[in-house]
Image (tube, rainbow, N blue to C red; front, side, top):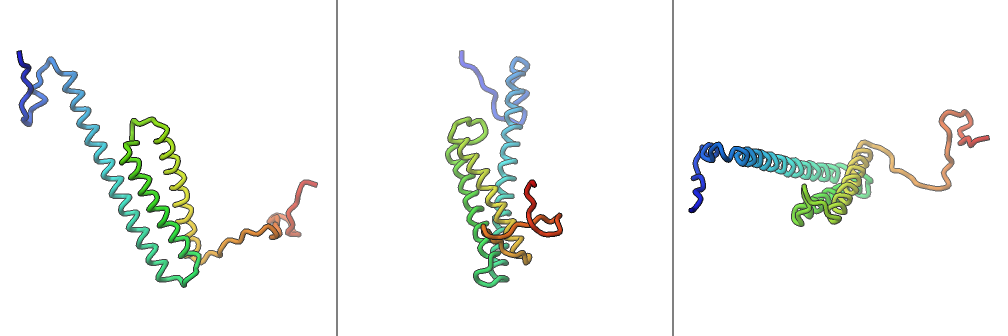
Length: 160
């Protein structure tokens, strides 16, 4: 005897009947989860796109307002590079299906790369803000004398 499947209608969950109540609940839960997942994914894509557009506006503004060779220009360019890399890593996660329930080593490596890339992006955005607001470039030299701000003689006190 052929099993009859419920026909497609607005009341399809009622047509499953009381025998399949567990199945009905699973289907409803699955539909809610799928809808929530889609909403979350859509929100993520929209906000990421808006962040990219905002960064593009920042790069253009910095490029127009600062002279050639200014550190803010360099930091803004690095910010854009890491934003594009961030988009590439995120696209790779989706394209290679390294999402949600995937517990492979590849996903772990992608997620680690994603995290490190995000830290670099935030660092260069911070440097862009620092340099654009008039902050001095950093100088990393070994011969610079270090000082202790709490002493009067401005020398670094080592344990005596």
